Every structure is written in structure tokens, then in C-alpha cells.
Length: 128
Image (cartoon, rainbow, N blue to C red; front, side, top):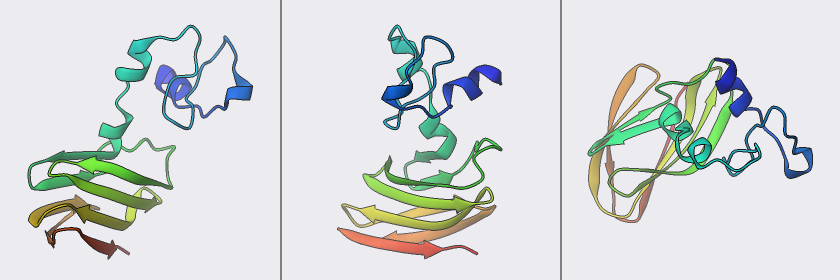
């Protein structure tokens, strides 16, 4: 768990150090020397969203330390763009944008909801 916490420690370019590493805002590793396994082997996206054809699961493996947050522009299968926000570890708001008409099941907060997306349309949902 300590390695994961070091990897996820937010850093900026001006804070570069050869000790401790971290992660830049663009999700690339901040540890010298550059190591490709640190950038491609770390699957933060899979912790926040998982998808397969017709199904989107949000926050399947959210770390306890990330109680609140938001994501914009993640891609789910079916060319669906997903923006979402969570509070206290639970989804609060979701926006799905699709390039084509399709049906998708959204799973979050322990519930499943079937959503019918229109071509070039947007579906906004709020969960309380």
C-alpha cells in the first residue's frame, strides 16, 4: 500500500525530487529516471471506471483517501464519454455523451440504471 500512496502523491514540475516520486496532473509518473512501467503499468483509470459493451461501472476500486473527486472526459466502450463527480465515496453526478444511439447499463452506488443514449446526445444524472 505504501508504494501505491507514493505513486499517487500529487506533485508539480517545480517539486521534482529524486526521492519519493509522485504523479503529475497529467497522470504521468514524477520519478527520475523516466520509467515506462510506472506510466503504463499503473491503471488509475480502472480504479475509477470499468466498461464493457453496454455496461459502465463507476468507482469499482476507489481508494479510501479519495473521498471526493471528479473526472472529465473518460472513455467507455461504445465511444461514450463519461464525466462524473463523487462525494464521500459515492457518485453524485454523471454525464454520458454518446456519438451514436445505444442502450447502456450504468452501475454505481450499488444500483443499476438502464440509460438510452441518443446520437450526439447527452444524458445528465444526479444521485443523492
